[in-house]
Amino acid sequence: METRFGVKRRVEHYACMIYSLGRIGVLDEAYELIREMAMEADKAIRGALLNACRMHGDVELGKIATEKILNLDPNDSGVYVLMDSLCASICKWN
Image (cartoon, rainbow, N blue to C red; front, top):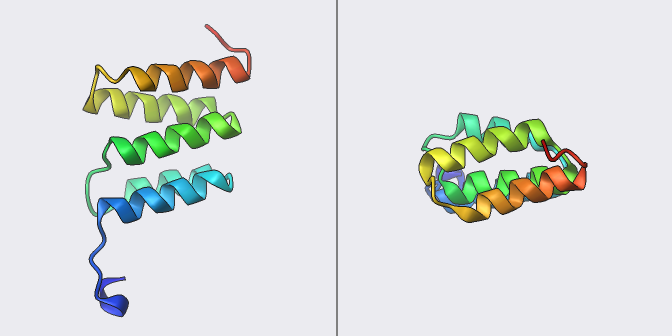
């Protein structure tokens, strides 16, 4: 992107990609992009992945995203709401 368009990759670009990949349901690709990022993924990026997991019912990847977000901000109550919503959508409250 930098070579072709003269634009440096920023966290906002990654967040947009994760959001887009998540919306179409390719969660493994979204997670792989996060793992290959040249910078540390922030809460927005992890939150986009968690929301996609909620939309598509991927509890295992949702747990990973939740743990990563809580490592960044243990007081983020929104994470608990999203994870509860994910678990409720597939009836796994334990």
